[in-house]
Image 1 (cartoon, protein in one colour):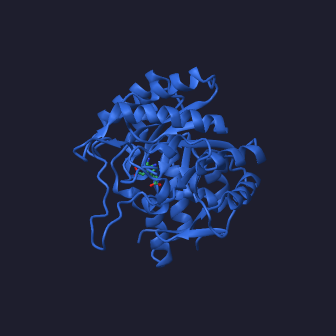
Image 2 (spheres, rainbow, N blue to C red):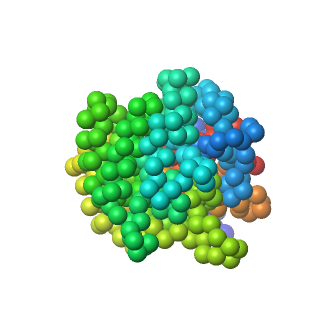
Image 3 (tube, helix red, strand yellow):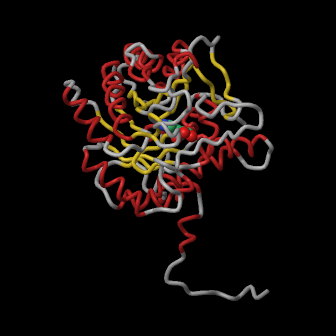
Length: 340
Ligand code: PBG
């Protein structure tokens, strides 16, 4: 080893990595609770809250326990939630009529949160999957394989208006039907709800990372043990092989009046996120989905990954790629005991 060897370098980038203080000063991105939207699951008739088996440390809430949860979230500066209902089997149907019932569980939860915490931003889901008996995001045609676009959009419009009337600040159509953003915008405007914003799931991929979410809201196909559990949504959600198509969808949603665009899932689709961000002046959201959460949670429970470090790294990378805001189950860790 030659201890006298010396390089005379014009620049030594490592000078900026010498201490935590200088690393912080030079950090180009940061995660703060104000960037996050907390997805929350609700269910009727629970005693307190109930953990979701495939999403350790994430619970379904009653409206009451949701209010406590929101109170804690607000104290930690988490100011936005996105509720998703687990709908009783008796309220599921082929025509998803419960979706626009003003007294649906989702609408009652929205109203209860807004009444108690007017400052909490509520992002209401507009999609039929919690309400259809088969779990698809729309009305099936007679062949039982194809979702009828325009009839589905008509129901989404009613659903959006009912959620906005319940008090939702933002309507988030998560279904990927054609033309739904423009139709929902017109329906809201016609109902004098012109101040309700639309967060469009513009680039929502047909992803297997949604598995745990479908357990959480009970939209996975039921059947005998060993029956196919995978719900094939490739007839409407985007093909993971495609990038240009995501840009086309984002442009269409923007032209139809979307206020915020979204890319989903997040981590496996950072290239899409960066491209969408570069192609629009609208704010862009990313959804770090259930499977992304559960993968990290399961691995951490086995002691294979450092939970907090991996969590924070993923959130930072999603921001760096271009997300202005992130929907993430990890938002809960700002106000509840983390998983490990
Ligand atoms: C359906 C919907 C899904 C998610 C949000 N809304 C899943 C699906 O398309 O089946 C997934 C969220 C997650 O996995 O965390 N409209």
